[in-house]
Length: 63
Image (cartoon, rainbow, N blue to C red; front, side, top):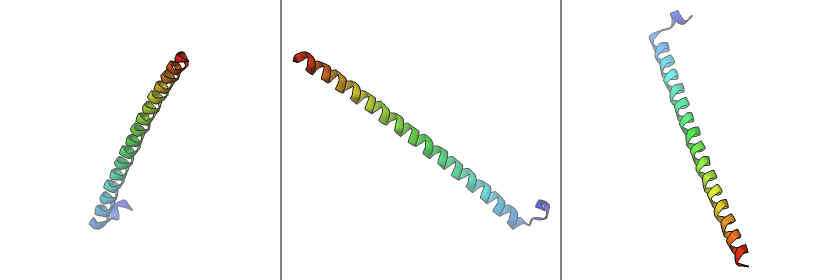
């Protein structure tokens, strides 16, 4: 069946393969970007909690 394809069929086939590769690459980039964003957000929240804890301990020592 594949051997009976015409040139236009092969062109469509290769264009589809290239399109799938582009989509896979884009989605993997998007996922990696989102994971980096989540890591940065977690680091920021962790830092904020640490600052808040140190501020609370300082305020309780002053009392």
